[in-house]
Amino acid sequence: MRQLITIILLTLFLIIGGSLVFLMTWDIPAPSHTVKKTLDDSRFPR
Image 1 (tube, rainbow, N blue to C red):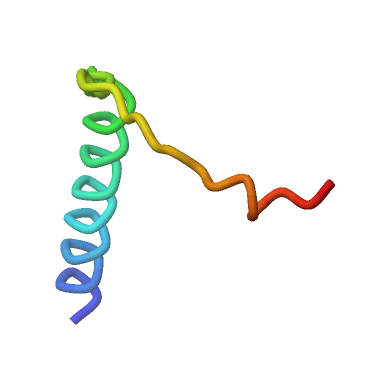
Image 2 (tube, one colour):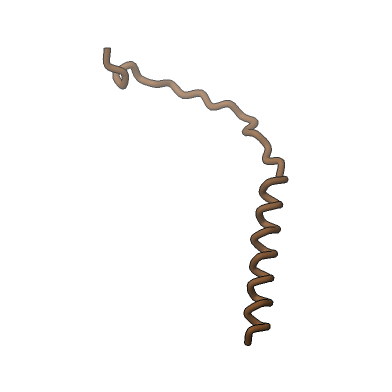
């Protein structure tokens, strides 16, 4: 039973560690399109 728990914890640690390494090294592209919004003057009181 102890060996099974050790294998499960080791597998979980490897999955989490691999996921963290993947997210740290993944080159996420920046948004490529511009957003243009028109805001009403009534939203900004003077």
